[in-house]
Image (cartoon, rainbow, N blue to C red; front, side, top):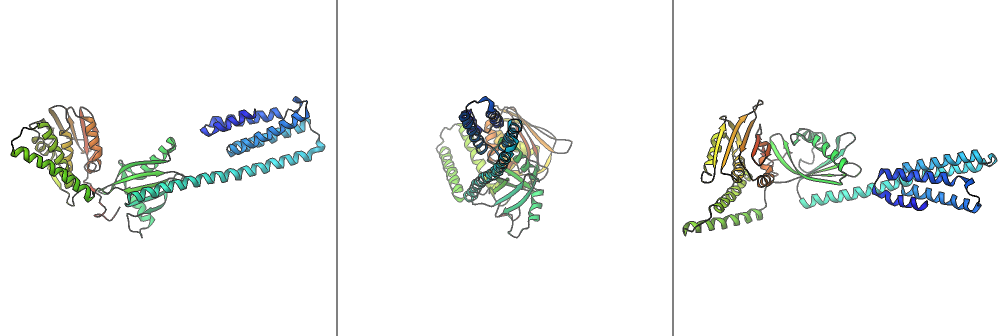
Length: 423
């Protein structure tokens, strides 16, 4: 029987509630069996079985959780009291009093032992958590926000940040948090959803990239959620400006491509039109990204129908693009829209695209592209440039035979550390 209990103690570490209950039940049954003194005729056997029962209780108490250990100890005391009153001599009541006192002292010891063990476990989690947090901050070497979140009161308790000036009060910063949005909802709701998701999935750390909208600015963060005794949220600002080495490397590639194209034109060589089209797409995308990342953002009032027709005209050798719907005038970041159209028109498997433009009952602008698209390619490119597209696009659905977008009602601008001094 003792062997069975030891096996269940080993299996307990599989984190099964049923095994914990089974372990306690076996311990109680074993205690009941051992306390049936009339089963044993041999006094030595009775003594040994009493020792076995005590050993089993100690093992279960130390290796198990405190609630099960305390309940098991109380039940054992109750059974001993019952058998003493039924079969024992009341003149030896002092023995029972000592037994009860020892059980109570044992429960008190177990409480402090498990409390210390749990505290040590939490401290280990906290140490590991802060090690991961500091590693992410030091590796990124960027501006960050560290939020201590109380998941019982559902609010932020403490803030450490390097985005706003150091003398910014907690209440002032909290106002920024209340106004910020993520995934078209208040960012605090987003935090709450992520914490609940952790409780279901039992993850130690959650990492993802998020886009945060504050007033008319869009900010990209690396979002991390760490768990110990309380959740800690880390937001590291992902600056969209590129290093000089990256820009130099890309410029070198583009110059080599241009040199190759000039040689083709000068020598009147034969060339593959499809490859030429792909090179043209690559150069235009890099050019537009450079313009979007520049200090000057081109916000223009345009007629969507006319602008799409203008871009479509560049593809007349490869595609037939027809536009339908309302004559719709909008203010928009023209280079971002151009980038989006390049990706759509450059990733079609057929030679015909139909574009429908309309406004819904809330006067929001929708554009639907119908055709046959390379869905995987478009999804990859959309995710790659999601930060830019989020400046003009509120929702986007990409399917194999259609792509539907809803434009933002207001113009957003990218947040860049060296340009903007508020969160």
